[in-house]
Image (cartoon, rainbow, N blue to C red; front, side, top):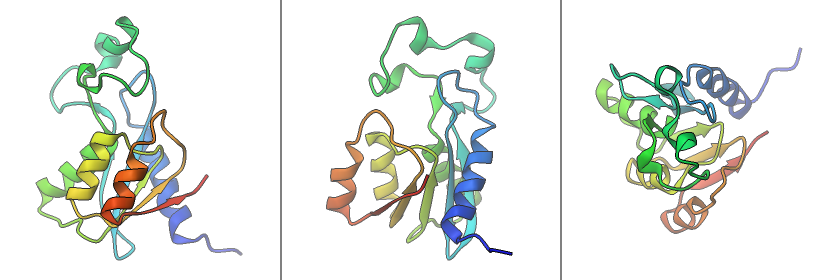
Length: 147
């Protein structure tokens, strides 16, 4: 029997978390760990208690907005944002932790990751923009890639 490594373990969990997404364009999941313990998870979807795109349709598709542009039009809160928010709601620190993302973060999520003092980001796939790379380099956030 071969035991899987931590990164693979947490990324598999992030992929399962993504299955809760209510986004019609892409399903994204995120898991935040501290000391190899899960402290929070998040997926992309509409705000709590608000109708989502599965019910109302996608505003970005209706307006032909390309991927990586005009994030403010979207109803969804990103997976990384939701994971950080859920940790805050529970009163759990993510400082020094690792975030596992099924897709690399947009620049807005990257800013939140930096300010949440998360020190490592493991990514399974690349998003259409890669602005996070320069920010993470400048802020000292390590990036790992895992398919």
